Length: 399
Image 1 (tube, rainbow, N blue to C red):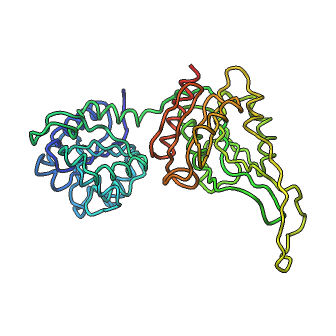
Image 2: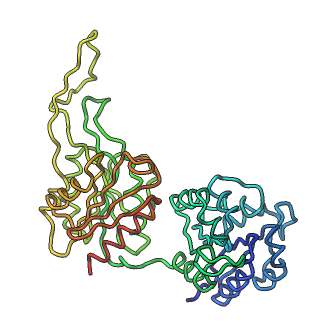
Image 3: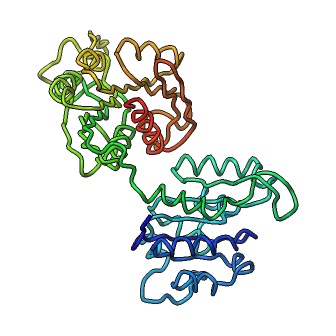
């Protein structure tokens, strides 16, 4: 591994495992990375800042108000420069601050400001690690995409035995490497992702639709792009920010989606249908705005829209991988398995949209990855992390 020029910010909090962080810095520097260290005041009671300054060849930041090396807003500068933000050891205190947005020292302020991937290596007493409050904070952070290295189990500094020991420096450095290096598992593949909600017109100003924001589809498209794939998004209406570096095909109705898929699908290696097509459309679409009729009921006649996933399944060519989604409110596994078979899918991602943190419009999801012979339950996590899990499963299916 050669990490020359890669920027890593390491936060060190007040725990006995702080001495191990010196080896983390040494290993990172040996690989060529530039390491900036932020210490809490409690951490300086365990290891002197001079140790990290010597190993990193950079000034160590402790005090929010200390004079910086050069003129900048120090916590913002460090937050922006980080390619990976690591906290090792991460105490129960810093996990709680991160989970609840508390920024009362240099480290908590900087980690709140960063947009870099965050890796934490917890280290604490077993009772503190297993405490309900800590586990709730861990779940919150995992759902936001924070990665965890450990903790390991063993004999702790306090003499207790159990979970809470910080992972070894080499394991933490390896975890950093997994974040730094793009996984080129889809290089050379053509991947199509559908995203968003289709709209079925009632009149020039009204339509039938659903709550899909496009976040899940966009997360998958970004993950596939970062793995080296040539990605196309067939995009219906979305509210999420559209990814860059990806070809976009715009559609409005479910019929538009079907026509686009007839053109795009045959040339793809992997098709992931994360869009939420409307299931019904009006039989009659008026050319002028529907007016109120003095208290009379408005009766709409609806008819089914085309089943796009089924149509794509019928077009499926040898070697092509098809992935569908099943957003359900009841009998989730039963409905998902039925769709998997009817629509000739290799994988279906099923979720109960009534669960908190799952479904439309949120940044997290809870899902089951279902194939013809397996079910892989994925707990509450960010949609980007679920996207990575889906692509890992696709890679496995292609083997």
